Image (cartoon, rainbow, N blue to C red; front, side, top):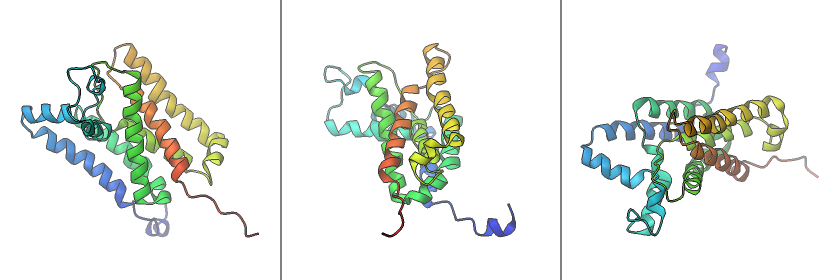
Length: 217
């Protein structure tokens, strides 16, 4: 890139820095807490399907407590590399869709992707003791927005094999391959959350993306 091109490069939207920073700060703050406080945060923010079942002894005391895991699981990570990887991929792909949508609509897209990942995990693992944490579902929603924003409209993006091919490949890697890996017991990857994030992010982009303007008639 030439110096002139670099000089006119628009800055990364503040919402991207905010999301990435929140992931990093949440992990740093978490590791310095006492074990009892960590357990309390895990119970409040991790996605645990049994807690959503009315007949479970682990169910929420109040209905509004369910909103904690639906969104808060994106701030919990198993290790520094887990948090760093999700933050890195969000930062890598979020800039362009955030510029197109604007910061507030992009924030809504990320939150809906995060909620979609939680709902998909809950639906597929209903009343089970499995646990899901991490921002990978939200990251998958950002992946969808990144690819769908690469052409004039989302239809144009899907019609272009140069976009559709990599998008499909990323979906296969993050959902199908990760599902196989998880079902084989090799790694505890919440592929269901990835699936929900991809779908919710794509739907949110279609809903929020600016409509192209045609010629005056």
